[in-house]
Length: 328
Image 1 (tube, one colour):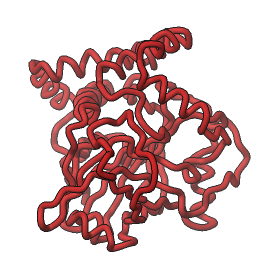
Image 2 (image 1 turned 135 degrees about the vertical axis):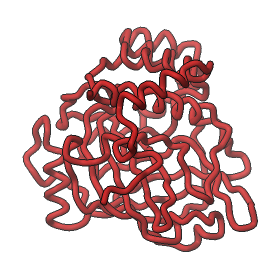
Image 3 (image 1 turned 90 degrees about the vertical axis):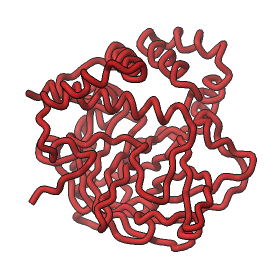
């Protein structure tokens, strides 16, 4: 029997057209109107492939499990994702709007997955390969997306008046390792911060990274579409997994600003492990129907006041209505 998920649209009784009508009704709010306008900026910059995500367009599905590793994390959170083994429905992807983006060229990547706990709770993790975000305000980020569509000179001109963007570009130019690697050999970062909440109600700000912990190499012949074959080969030969390494905020870290990198020594806990058991195309799998909204959280987590998080949630909600309605 197919499970009914609060965030897996394909498993709901709603049809794509009904969902689109719901989105249209919701669009009367100011927030949703802003999300719709921002979504159009993404379309103009990255292009629009009918029925596909407008960013992170190319990708494939996987299923697996999410299991506890170090119970030290339980001092900070009572979330069931840290205490029980959960089911995972996920997706790996290329950043950008090209449905045929080449696998054999370096680029930013994405990892997103829906966790279903044994008691039926849901939790979304959505991470990418950037170390931190290029803007702390949604409007500034949309300006960057617009500039990207205009070209490198437009980005340089925008950065001249944006210290956050200058810091982002300088850091990633200096520190980025452009070695070609598969998804399973790539580290992904949360960028946004969240609060953990324990049994006493204490809140602790965190970020985290998904650090490769299984087979990580390129083991098949590379071509423009080799990444799924490579992950399947690594699954055959061993284990494909990532460890969730949680970084506990220091007193001087700002959890509401995604454009600031947390510097210096921090307490880190390898809290859980994501293990892939199989992969599938989007057509054959279930990840295409999931809205990977990072604000969908289990008990023991709370969103921060980071405005980028709210903007992501609104744009994703608008986007899934659009692309599922296109599949009719």
